[in-house]
Structure formats: C-alpha cells, structure tokens
Length: 68
Figure (cartoon, rainbow, N blue to C red):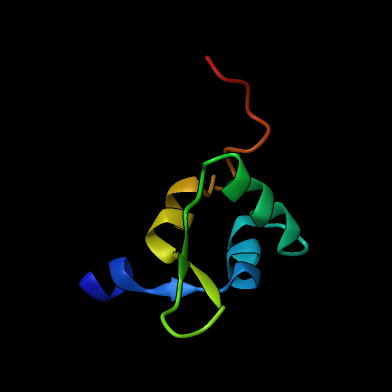
C-alpha cells in the first residue's frame, strides 16, 4: 500500500484516470487547489501523487446523479 501512496504520475496519466481528454484540465485542478504538483529534483519535470488524484476522481456511476 505504501508504494501506491508514494507513486508519482504524469499530468497525462492523471488526465486519463480522471476521464479528461488531455492534461490541460489537470492544470486547472492544480490552479484551483484540488491537486498539488511535485517537482522532480534536478529536472524541470512535474508530477502528481497518484493517491491525491484518486481522491479527486469521482466514480463513473456517481456522475450525473443528483446530490441530496
């Protein structure tokens, strides 16, 4: 389970998990404070924590149901 918690993924991978067509929607989630990006040391590459992305994800069967 620790491996899952510490795993970093690309913006494109996060977009796929969240059901978006490309990474630009992930950038919006970062800007709005829903996700936090992590910079890989000694590079300009940025990643997201898989655990955080899955917390933001909404299961497909829940989408479209009215909130009570």
